[in-house]
Length: 116
Image (cartoon, rainbow, N blue to C red; front, side, top):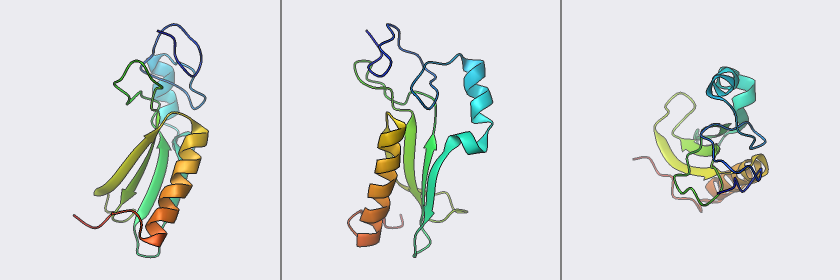
């Protein structure tokens, strides 16, 4: 089956931000770079922290669809990383748009991210 992002005929476990498959050592080098991993972060007025990062690791266990290599999570605070909400994305553009949408939903009270 082809990678739906790159058209490559093999699915990989590791990907760069563009969805290009990576060898595990290249992925590990990129994971060690905080600026490469960070997509966006927002601290909300109530202290909750919304963080979107590149994972580079395919979290989609359905091999017939896009690799999910980005993640947006809502935490209690930037220091208290008890996760309250999570969504994953296939592309950088989806991750950026998803981060913005989740922040807006939190601000409007439309996303149920109450403390556990």
